Image 1: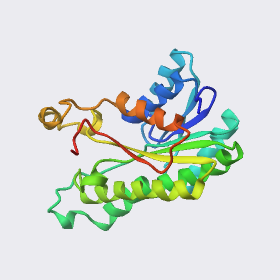
Image 2: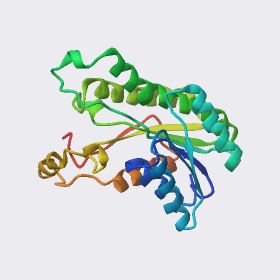
Image 3: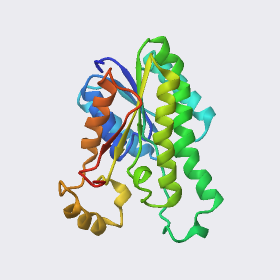
Length: 246
């Protein structure tokens, strides 16, 4: 699929991987709706970076854990750009909880993480599906995590939510074929603000990886764009982790 003149919605597009994806898509000629929940300043900065390079973008607020917000978001994207062709389900949250502290993984923590990381991705896919089907082609990329493969990560609820995202990808690929392709890109450690306050830990991790470096958001964005473009692939879980899981 040629991404030029396509319309893309990127959730959590203001920072980190989301920002890198928005910029990469715009560089390929796509119009980009930069979704944010609370990071308005960062989302507007992302839009300005794109516009400075002659691209088209707009910042749009919505809490992806709320189905009504998502439906209004997609309607606003269509009103602004005429349609929607691509979805990058990037918005995610976590809580840093030691794995052996089971009591700290409260019902509220489980609900909050799953509402955003799993249900939010489903809500977004469901809302864009009619437009992608009407266009007779479309692509969705969900952003997973190696936490969903290894069972490790910032907390048990987070790891389990990302395993659910990987499963959701396969289910949606079946449900939305043949018009819509659905794949999942699974990053390992990435140099984003998620490491804030733990920079030394990130520095110590890098030499242990096969490629001896932490991935950049731009590395993940490049693979996400490739997955959107690849017309012969759906339902795939693609890991990009500098060899972390080997």
